Image (cartoon, rainbow, N blue to C red; front, side):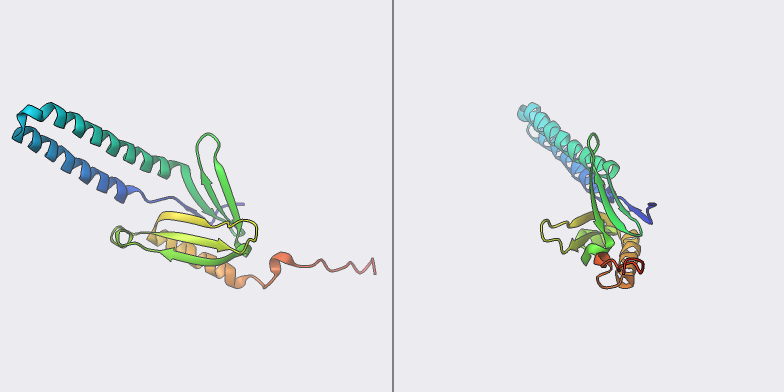
Length: 168
């Protein structure tokens, strides 16, 4: 089944924020090293540690972008995540009961939002959370999902088989 929509997390705003924090840390390191030359060595070590942590956050964002995919086909919504042993969660569009779009303050500024899909599964809660999706793509995907949900017939997923005329 070919994907109608393929969505990926939008990580650029988070990387820009991490880069801004890194610049502030570098300025603070230089300022503290100049103000307190006796402690410059410790300031540089602490600053390098903070910069390494920020680098790990950037790597995590790239990992999320490269190895997280949301696909919407005509019948299913598929969430794929992982490298070595990728996980794949599949939710039939017929099983979706609720669609929720969540836009945070930063999401409104940078143009991304989260999409939550609920199902009425009794055993497991197969909620798919599409995090940090571009708002333009997300709006088109939500329109598509809503149109598919409107077009479905009540109980179409659990239709009873009608007996063959030959067996009667």
